[in-house]
Image (cartoon, rainbow over all chains, first blue to last red; front, side):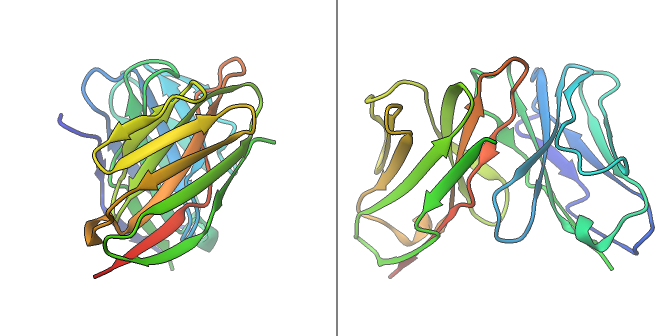
Length: 114
Length: 113
């Protein structure tokens, strides 16, 4: 596709529910990243995939957060037993190759936990 | 711990003014520094800088990196109301396996007509 596509754009869930956020990267992009952006802050790294391999998950805040990219294209970020502090914008980015290419971002999913 | 600090956090100017946004960093084995513009949606890529002293330019925007003093600046000349946005600075460390962007807090720029 022309750009990184994320869905849904907005998600409201009750505390304790599970949510799944989808990212469709730019076609042919090998690297895929998830970031969490709290209000008034810069994005913070969550996890990184190179093709289907999850090479870095050091930014995932707890074991309630899980990400996958089974076929090396679309990725899903899942949050189990959501809590209010999970409320944020979740941004997905993709890039052509390792490190030397800029990351291009999707519009994000705004998650609100009530 | 890798760290990026942007200043000012907020800036309000009149249309036509020139602005300079600052970004300083502390990072393990620096690889590159990037600038993004974020309006209401996705951060959009502006510049990627890897070498010191080489200015990158795109229209009214320009940026330069100083790897000795560990900072970068983003200049916008003849500002327009459409330049109003949050400007994000990020660095990529180069230790093995590191690909993530480490972002600063951003500078909120408001251009008044």
